Length: 195
Image (cartoon, rainbow, N blue to C red; front, side, top):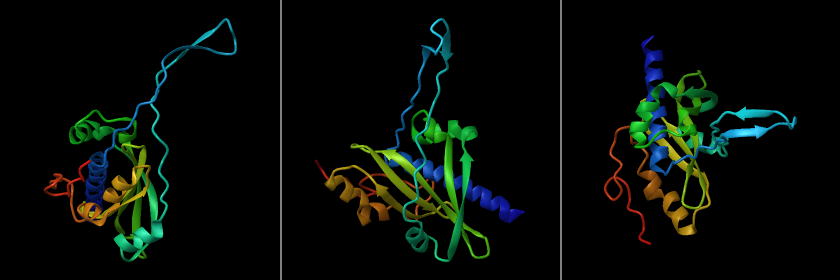
């Protein structure tokens, strides 16, 4: 029982860690909704449309074999879980320093397992906002909340920005860190180039 509870606590730490790192990488996600009245096919009838919030589509995992080998030696597979964070939204909002957006209420976690079915960690994929558009972020986290690896799959940033973000000093600065560790630019993380 203790092992299962420890694994749940690890997933909780991993989920919070993913949200914090996604925020650090620039996660500001948009609300898309419609409000007001619209006319349906019957010209004499009006239909009230309720405002709705839509999240962005899930990010595909583009290089699972390479990342599993590098981040979780001994990994033999994974299973996908949807982790709903609605009960944690006030805490998530405090951590992000802003009101949670539509995409902050759920995480799709890829639970990595070894041949015996034991969980080695989770991989989470998120789309975060960069200056030039969306950036796909892949994050591997151990059950104790330690970042095992981080990668950017795709993005539309300038060559200089992409080179900095994807450079080993920047990405390497996250590896080994846990939720709550300081992440101060220029101190704990490399400073961004001027310009």
